[in-house]
Image 1: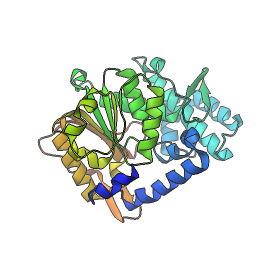
Image 2: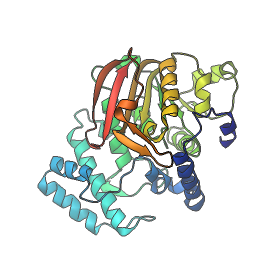
Image 3: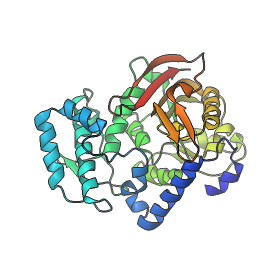
Image 4: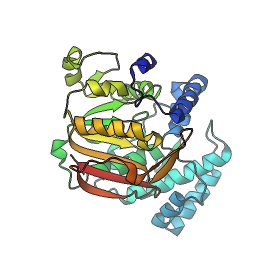
Length: 327
């Protein structure tokens, strides 16, 4: 996978922030192994360890109510320390995870949680609720799943999903479980793509997989590619895919970690590849570390011909916005 980097355009090469984060991720894999990735590099994606004064916590406590919040707080205080986490971080993680799970349970009118469980692959932090292993990643992915499959989106038209920057595949896991007829394309840089490929092929062993491999022309891999259910690509390979081959293009919390020239490049690919819908969820404003470049909500180069379905503040992470477009 790393051998593909010389083929990347300048716009696709990781930002300096991701260069630094990649070094950290690789070192964590070396030190603790793939077997513990949910306790190490997964925390560099969308796992939150925040103190009780954080806005996420305050919002979720209001949603849970006083007595439920008190029970969750004291349960977190007496919980055993997680390996590879400090004591206070164990308390913060457990508190937020249980509050978030309460919020998802409260809003799970379709009963999706009955179909989902946190896979043991990757040694997740052990937080139990009613005898079931739970996680922030599973809860946040279900929130995103419901936001993406909005009532104004025609689910019958969503067969092929492409996610740019999927991390280890937390959102892919939820879609492949709840929408078993879908195909899911994961596009990322290593080591994230390596972890995602190993993870998803382990938990979905019966699904046909197009594992990462270098190729120069789409025709060289077309037959195997079109027969696969789960596919793994590096970003430079997006250009090799045929036009309008994706029903739903997804990006969650990674475009805001890129320079504006990189964002423009990917929006061009979104326009070229997508025949259905585009969903993205990003910080409202962020300054990309090491790049000295600030990305704001209004900076994303949305095309005039894209029809806005909704654009709103995220329900739990209030510093994020999310938007869904029909292309």
